Image (cartoon, rainbow over all chains, first blue to last red; front, top):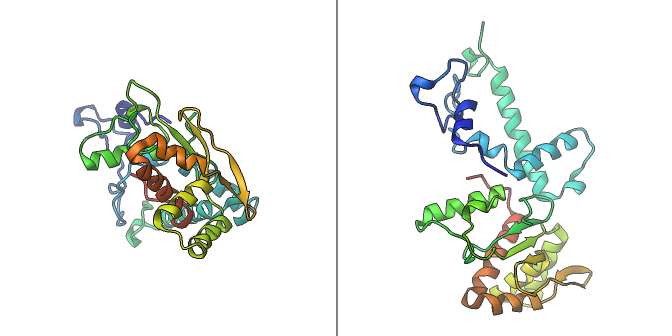
Length: 112
Length: 153
C-alpha cells in the first residue's frame, strides 16, 4: 500500500499538506478535521487520506457493508472486527448527525 | 510475501530489532516509523540493502483459544516467558526468511498450536534478542485478542 505523494495530497485538499497560498485553487477546500464550519469536535490527529487507505480500515468498511445488510453476523466476523465495526458505525452516525444539523443549531449543514 | 494487516485474517509481523530494518535513531521517530509500517503493511521504506527481514505470519486468536491460553497459564502456573511463548505458538502459522526453520502445528486438547521447536529456533537464531522477539510478538497477539483496534498513527 502506497501513501499519497505530497503533490497528490495537496491536489486532494489534505489539510496536513496545504498548498502554498499563491498556488491554491478556490474550488479546493483544505480539510484537517478542524477547519469545517462550526465543527466543535476534537481536531483530527491523523490525515484522513492516510487512515482511509489502511488495510484494517478498508476491511472494516467492507465488513460493515455486509454486516449492515444482515449478511454477516458477529460469529462470522470475530471479536476484533466486530469492535472495529462498532467504532466505525458510531463515528459515521456522529458525523451524519452533525452534517444533517443546521449551522445555527451547532451542526455542519449550511442554511440557504 | 508480507501479508497486509487484518482484523480477521493472517497478518505479517516483523521484529522491531530485525537487522534488515533501517530505523531512525530518535525513539519517537522510531516508534512512529514502526507503527506506520505495521498499520499500512508497507515495510519498503524501512528496508536496507542487505538480507530481507524475517517475517512472522500470525493469525488472530479466537475467543476460545485465548481463554484456553489464560487457563493454561493458571493451571500450569506458567511464568511470563512460558506464557509468552505459548501465546506465540497459538498465533504463529508461518515464518519466512528464517533459514531452514518451518512452523509445524499440532493439536493439544483440540487446540492447534505451533510445535515448541520454532520457539527454540527463535532463541537459537536471534541470540540475545530471542526473548525480546517472543515478548514483542506475544504483546501484539494479546493486544489484538483483548483490546479494541488501536488509534492510527
